[in-house]
Amino acid sequence: MAWTWRFEKSDGTEVQPAIEPEEFTTQGDAESWIGEYWKELRDGGADRVVLSEDSTVIYGPMSLDAPE
View (cartoon, rainbow, N blue to C red):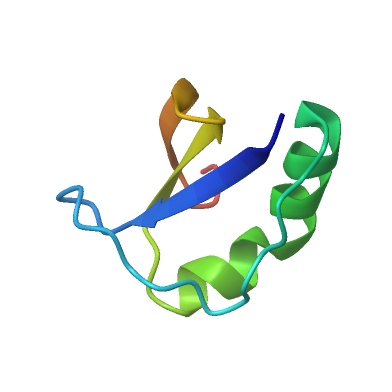
């Protein structure tokens, strides 16, 4: 199983991430990675992300905006 992130603009258009992620072997590893790099990804042009396991969407889109 591979856990992957899709990076999108707010309209759902896929964008290249500012930091290229690896394929993760667990959901926890994928979530830890996004927790570490979300600011750089947002600053690089991604507005939101979608987490998938193989071809199944697990959740998202999830905004990369900071909580107010």
